[in-house]
Amino acid sequence: MSIRVSVVGASGYVGGELLRLLLLHPGVAVAQATSGRLAGRYLHQAHPNLRGISQLQFVHPDKLEPCDVLFLALPHGQAAASVGRYAGLAERIVDCSADFRLGDPADYRRWYGEEHPAPEWLGRFVYGLPEINREQLRGARYASGVGCNATASNLALLPLVRAGLIDVTRPVLVEVKVGSSEGGAQSSESSHHPERAGAVRSFAPVGHRHTAEVRQATGLRDVHLSITAVELVRGALATAQAFAAGPLSEKELWQAYRAFARAQPFVRIVKERQGTYRYPEPKILAGSNYADIGFALDDESGRIVSICAIDNLMKGAAGSAVQCMNLMCGLDEMAGLGFPGLHPI
Image 1: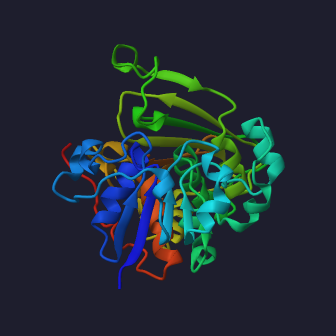
Image 2: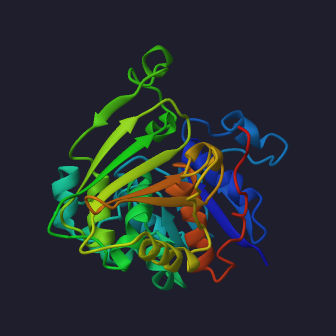
């Protein structure tokens, strides 16, 4: 019997990706997709790639009915404001917003500039990155979303952190290049095509909120993110730089990365001696839940450069959310997520 799922806030880019994945998922049936603005219109009128895939129409959020799993793809703050209502409608919730990512209300206050609207719920949500919390997600009732920049950064750093290879007395710096879809489906002055096209724009050189997720997930207190917008639609490329805790060989790095990737069905190592795709490249991951990681070592300085490429809407949002659902519901972790990306594209 299929698991009944619904998507709240289904008209945006993350909502559209959730619908694409869930409509083709072998173990679930999509019951409802909500949108206050598009209620009564067909899904494909917001997500043209779904034409012929479903005859579902958007329903108003007030008409949301009980289901087994509820995906929340709402703007910041809205999920937390109504979490009690949603918990009464579904046994399991996967929230794709930032509302329940940080476990400490003080961290939320620091990075989001306000008190958390439902602090008593923070401890109930498992941070939704399976590469960190796989066992905690099995059978869990509530999973948070993940930040796309944080996901790329975390997956770049975790092989080094778990192997104890980083000199934690020195700062760790991560520069993330991101595509325009990170800004969401609603346009703004900065996303207007004449302003965005051809841009390489540093929009958060310091102080990006996803820094808090990286510190929480890796345990690194002196890690800092810089975010740069580039001319992509989908994609995030994190380039992390850290110094080795001691003498280090490339062989030892290979061992660390292989040990990490071996346990992760969606993590692939990309490090070739020649060819175009010697290191991770987000372009070929469009539509895929895979994360490609690679590395380089500067022998002279002991500097490690660790790289991770993802599709920000997939591994950085909807793909990880469906991966969480699979674990929460006892399904195959890779169910509905096997698409490897496209080449050429």
